[in-house]
Length: 257
Image 1 (cartoon, rainbow, N blue to C red):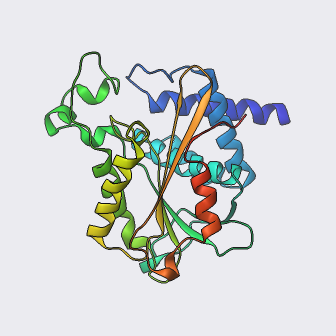
Image 2 (spheres, one colour):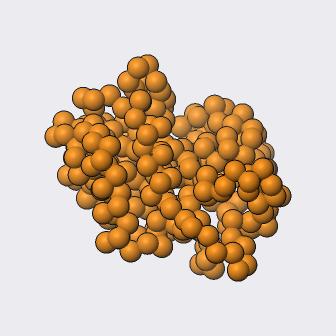
């Protein structure tokens, strides 16, 4: 019986991999380490009795798969670094549902909303209507403008309606991000740009932004995380200091095997 569950998990992981990169060449396609990583994420969902809720999205359109995987992978990562997943689909402002709440130790729970912008969001209208969206993310000798900050600002604006003004809120960003990853930009350049945008939006009830990306550069699957505190957050919505310290500890590559 246990063997059957493992086989089903692997099959679903392979289906997800094919769905993610359908029609595109990729370093991830048929990557067994990616398959194993997906299996860990699926086992995480199964442990929390959430797998049935996600299966239909994993079998849906590519955008649904990317969104579902971002939610699953971020909850998995946070649990790996010491957070407890408390509730799934918690009610936020206006009866909107968030993705989950987390807790670190005995500190207050944090409402988490996950957004999954992708590099396709930086394509022009002509490219979206043409073949470019079916091609690999990176093409040889292609030079183009990339703006990961705009993708993250878009994620903030989409998440705002879900955040209650008297709660601790965290925006988590996953997916396949920009042509230029935030992790490729020096922190002293990227963070001031995000802080400027947060100050301009002036949203006091967002504690901060957590970004998660992953890749395989020859040493197995690597998770990269990045936490930025909202410079204009009100005290009631601030993430506890120990939570921010824990998130900032992982502003680097992390391995889970």
